[in-house]
Every structure is written in C-alpha cells, then in structure tokens.
Amino acid sequence: MQQMLNNPALMRYTMVSAVVGLVLSVWMIVASILLLGMKPIGYTLMLSNAVVLLLWAIVGTIAGIAIVGADATSFIGVPIQIAFPVAVLVVLTRPNIKEAFQSSGF
Image (tube, rainbow, N blue to C red; front, side, top):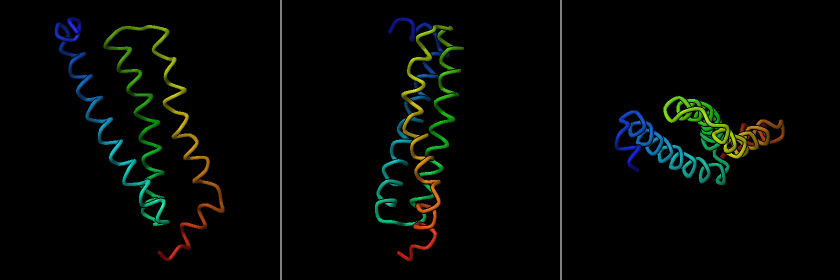
C-alpha cells in the first residue's frame, strides 16, 4: 500500500484498471443477456467484448510491468486472462453459430 501511495503512476494504473474492469464486466453482463436471448446485437457485443478483453490483457500486463517493474510472475496470469475471450471467439465464429445469429428474427 505504501508503494502505491509513493508512486503516482502506480496509483493511476490501479484506478484505470479498476474502471476498465468495471466497464468490461458490465459490458459482458449486457452482452450475455442479449446473447442468451439470441439477439444479433448480443452476438456483436460479445465478440467485441472478447476482442477488447484480449487487448486489455496484453496492454494491462505490459503497462503493469512497465510501472511496477519486470517480474517473471507477471506473465503467469496472462493465459488465464485470455482463456475465456479466446474460447468466446472460437465458439462464436463457428459457421453454424454465425448463421444462427444472422438468421434469427428475434
């Protein structure tokens, strides 16, 4: 905690990470509800959320390492962070899933 108070860059990084995490979480909830309702906008929102989550995992890790300092343990969480977005992209880009959302008249 003392390190965070003494390092304004670390404080900003922590605040930005919290806000981005909150926005992505709300985005995921809305996209999930619409996706379960077979709404085409839910499909689009979930795909875009997965891409943004992937980008944020990479950018957040790089920024965290640059601010806090290089540490090998910083890369341990990256595969865990990107597992869900990759799975979403794999599943939602399958031809039969794409077709189901493009032809759904809900």
